[in-house]
Figure 1 (cartoon, rainbow, N blue to C red):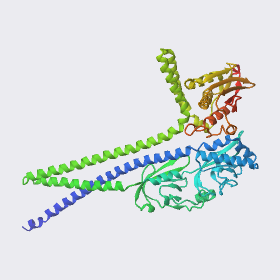
Figure 2 (cartoon, rainbow, N blue to C red):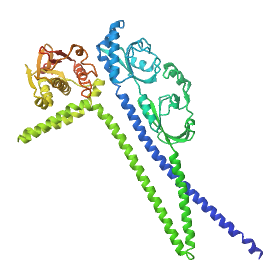
Figure 3 (cartoon, rainbow, N blue to C red):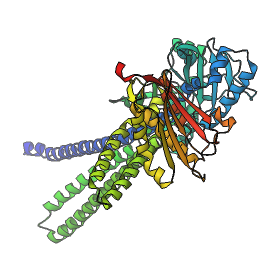
Figure 4 (tube, one colour):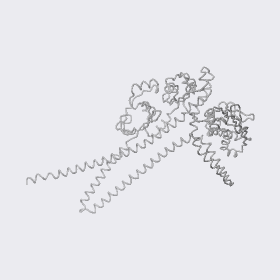
Length: 597
């Protein structure tokens, strides 16, 4: 009897151990569910952050690329070259100051200035301002030092004269292969920061040293991602990149390091709670975008999944308990089971609908970002694609007319030309880049008359529609010039189009093209009967962004690009006023005797 008494307390202890084990298993499973839900939410946040980083990086590169070519164009201005060669000519300095002021206003940059080889500013667009850069020595700036060494400079910093931050483009000014000075363009990129502040995103842009110079949170600006070593502090002090700003660390603590530059960090300035940090390097400027995502949603998802898993296990346990009581209350258990299954089905359907809505919203954001980038890219190439697109329309109209008239062979030939034009559109999209950088194009002997015929073919439909009388005066059909046929045709089409635009409101419309020899030169003349070119406009005709057309009708780049193309051929493009009052453009190209090629 004594042994039987001693064995009875073991049964409750055994049951308690089973309950403890079941609770431990339930908590473990719920923990796994919460961890899975948190990781899934974090993965979505990471994907959204990568997409936002792509958008920010593309918008920044698009803004900077708009001005990258601008310093190179200054060496096209003869007054700029003359001032660097004759720095004591104050009248010439005034002309260059006025030119830079106008160019700065047209391009939307902050400041444009010219520096000599000693680093002293000779002319500036802000010459009227009390804080004018004229006379300042900026040789200590890294972008000036790089440009003087023949390397195009790029630099973000705070102006030592104006105190205004900006990005500086610098490029050497050369004449006949000899450097005369440096052209510098300052651009305000703070407008991007203003857009960031209007969104709920937390994003910052840091330089190679880890100094934050753009941020959606103003309090983080001019702080560092980590304490700077003494060598970096000395370099920043020597270049005065951030002038009088004190560079203090943000005290960012890494909590968990993940792959691909992703980590969870904590910032005292952000409440010292864990946030997701994603970074994107921007080469070759050695900048780094950092995007911080709020993880409160991921934490809420993890807690919700944890609680839901516990509730689900509790429900399953209740089902088991109800199953043990089936014999006593079968009907009640069945009703309770149906009710529980209905609730589980509703919750599952609700979660499925929420996930589907989230995917649709996320897809819409991605598509909107893509359309914004496509719009920025389309604006850059519209000008150069306009001529071949107009030609395609002309050829298509001609083909339709020929088919209606039963001239199928000619229509087939027309359509073949359309195919060739489509192939050449890939060449045309590279012309704006060629304007900023000298192309390595081989020159050959090109029959000038054939190039004129090909160029005329592109505007033939417009000539017919506008009832323009075309006259071609070619004394020698065998004149060959040293050039590239495609680019010569582009120059001719540009001149033809400008002539047609000039004669749009004229009663007499005649377009005359002539070809003749003059010593070692082949001269191609394009004359119209338009209103002519006033003397005050003639001197600025080949300057970039200068145009007399109404706003939206031209960018002011056509003649500047054409003049550079002809100059790369070793020739010259000049404009003059005809005796009848119209305009005449002359293309002078090196003459080549076909037998010697």
